[in-house]
Image: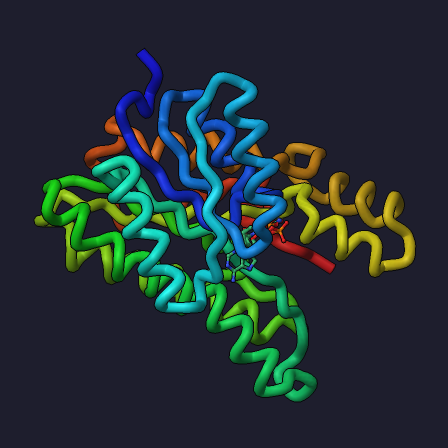
Length: 258
Ligand SMILES: NC(=O)c1ccc[n+]([C@@H]2O[C@H](COP(=O)([O-])OP(=O)(O)OC[C@H]3O[C@@H](n4cnc5c(N)ncnc54)[C@H](O)[C@@H]3O)[C@@H](O)[C@H]2O)c1
């Protein structure tokens, strides 16, 4: 029996990267997946790929920071599949700057997509889950939710907010049968991190150095996060809510000593 048989899941930002890895694992495990992404072409190509592998997936273009578009995403999902079991709030942007170099626009962009996006998608999904008496929300936070590196003020603030909001929603809707958890990924190979490697001027060198610094000696893959999300989305985790699940190759277990 597939682990998500009969369930309907929305995965935001699943046109590429971590979201795509989550959507792939979900579709393989029997979920009907709404591939929701601001990049319509990317969403279409992910959905087509999942369908060609035997899954059920449909693309929907959405900006998670736009309330009307989020409302349409949830309405579409309910009209199409008549239920919503799982919401993965994955869409996010990396804005890595010290506070003094961050413009108000950059600050607001990070907060709008990374935190307000979680708020809006959850706000419109929760009533349907409440009515059904069950649901699982999985927020993709970050190791930056709990530990900081220099020069990442907007990103760290937004991801700290995601961790706090995860606990809050878990407390407020647990009695309704809704569980809310977050995953804190470490270094995962995606278009986002590939951009960081490229911007360093030495793509291969930086990639190798990052891999060597992980306890497990490699960079994570989107599906590494997908397997954690699968557990939190499935009925195997019905006693689990309000947690931060670290999928980080041991990154947060080690102390930098120089
Ligand atoms: N890659 C990592 O190492 C890493 C580590 C920790 C946390 N994360 C988090 O994981 C999530 C995914 O990261 P990724 O590395 O896959 O990023 P990515 O840039 O590779 O992919 C992000 C996807 O989200 C979509 N997206 C961006 N803004 C959107 C919006 N407003 N509405 C809808 N879709 C939008 C993009 O089109 C893209 O398909 C983010 O929340 C990120 O902060 C990533």
